[in-house]
Image (cartoon, rainbow, N blue to C red; front, side, top):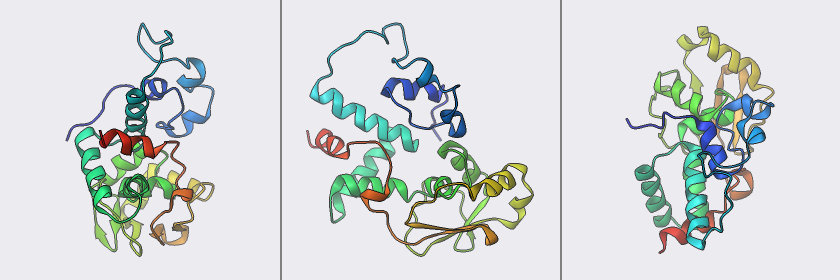
Length: 208
């Protein structure tokens, strides 16, 4: 499976804002965006005018990087969003939000989406009582995500569960710490998704 292996801090610097790709580190003084708010590379500090196409491309890249999705998979999600009823841009965000790795992160069982993806790959979670180790697995209302009983002995899992109570859980999800589980109550609406993107620009890009 292809994946991005370079520094994720470079991705935030390229977009010129925090994408919160490294969990708690992004909230500290160690954050690279706070230290160097310009793009990486030798020409990163040069200011240049961005075209309309450039703005649209940057929004697409930003959204891809926030959710850790590669280009081909992202295009597939856009095609799926376009076929669904409703507003394409909001459908796209809804699809990305209901990925299993993102829901694990939103529930607080992973400190970042990258860590949540790794925990899912290692088979630490069940969906409706069945083991699922596919980060891109799309959840639907009523689905219950549970930490596997055998995984509760993991130091990392235990630490995340202990801290999950201090984590802000979106309204469309329900966290049950006593049973080490979470539930998808409904599909998220745009107001419940805090991703800092202008999705209409992405729709315009794919409409070219």
